[in-house]
Length: 389
Image (cartoon, rainbow, N blue to C red; front, side):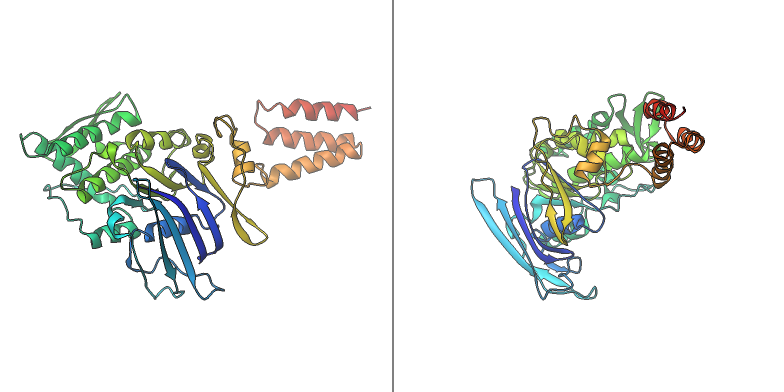
């Protein structure tokens, strides 16, 4: 199942926007307030229903409207729509979900924290009826459960017949997530006395809790998705690498160093090769790894939010510099600071007026600002030398 298209009319800050989605990875970018999260919420509510106060109609409209086209995986495309009439934060909206596919959408919000969780006991799997699942689609997956889920699977895997073949398969995949993120790391064991997850690293065996925030952020996403798939499809079960559904992730780069940001998209598609991802980001490093048509760049044109037209090349944005992504895709007008631009302006004014002494002073300030290996130093020096006489 995949979302082929969504039309959002008079919802949040969006007046009328139609977006087509790719089957694998979709990366939504744009300035703050442009409507990235509204798009994710609009998709989620097509698979949520019941009461919610997250979506609101546009301030100057009387009624909002969302229409989705869903590829059901059998060659048929289903249209589903709902209205958004409320504006007050106190009021709730009731949307009609696509009942048969509530389980096929998983949403991860920005609340991805990593406080220590002590497992004094390993609990049973929580129930996932349609109401609880729909609530999860609106409010986001509870990632505090992932440690307990992993430890549960480890302990029961030691007892023949305790886990189904599907769950054993999924647990093996989950253990490999550590090495998928970094091939020098691997799952070691669960300590019997404390229920703590232990990880082998280049510096020795450590507690799961001692991994970096970035490592745990990636693991929480991977484990959170795997856990939800298992709980939602308990009988007869679904292998996590065969799950065909939609996964929404808001601010994919959260807690990640740029090196991790450049890897996270490929890690997700390796772990869940049949999933359609729809994510939002402010990271040029994530966009740098994108293939053609995977980036949904939003901008405001004459007060109307639109999808920006971007070049479509064989390798997408994988040969673009960060600066090119920032300016041409993300709409940053200038990658230099105000201090730098003022210093350049002072230098250029001195050159235009052939004021050598002022030019020297401006050049010295620029040298303090520029990267030590920046070649623009030579160009500025040539310009200064040209007016020395």
